[in-house]
Length: 282
Ligand code: SF4
Ligand code: SF4
Picture 1: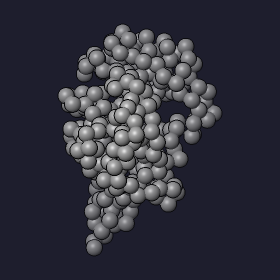
Picture 2: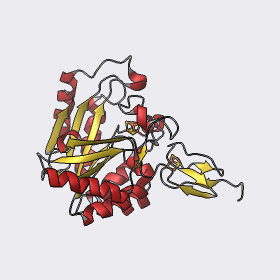
Picture 3: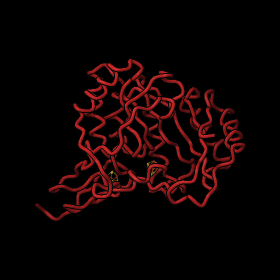
């Protein structure tokens, strides 16, 4: 075994990892000289949620999805609602092993109990830091005649998006801001997320929705939401945009919630470009 670092190409961080070292996402590591998804199949959360909670407003309304999360994330949003699983590694959180075939069986059983159960949602933390699990489980979920839903910040390489896109029936991608500067503070890259949105929008089998959480002092200007919505409309004016309200969480507990009136105002700005704009958490 050599001691040279190997670079991970899954996200723009491009972590160079020496043997035994863990990536910034805490879900990948250099194992014997190769980058491996060490968080593969390690599940911290499993629940049946309405699709509207993902949020998906215009895909199989009234149905539910078996939602699962693991641990780890490549971003550092100071307002993360799920920091207890997204900002920790394998030693800091309780997890259990759920193989792709176990997950597909759980989904089939849930569907047999209630036919409104549409399939599986990969969500809660960043599912694509272990995209191989989404690929493997997604194939088996499709074989069982059920659907796959992806909820992601979308800050991953084109290769990863291209691997999973054919398996995803509906996605909600966070577009956290329309500023490279803001994305840099999160450890992300705006252009990369834009590319993910473009690729999923161009996948005919994938229904795409986008969410922008309005965080006071971060992305709450009319000019920024105007630019963001105008760009989305260039991709596809029928893309669904959720403009949602921030509530204090993790490292932003000292900031009050976004005023409801501002969320409504910014949603109206977005409606200047897009046909389907929804407000959330109000
Ligand atoms: S996926 Fe994880 S290990 Fe790979 S580059 Fe991104 S943060 Fe680093
Ligand atoms: S991308 Fe999502 S899970 Fe990751 S830190 Fe940001 S809000 Fe949390």
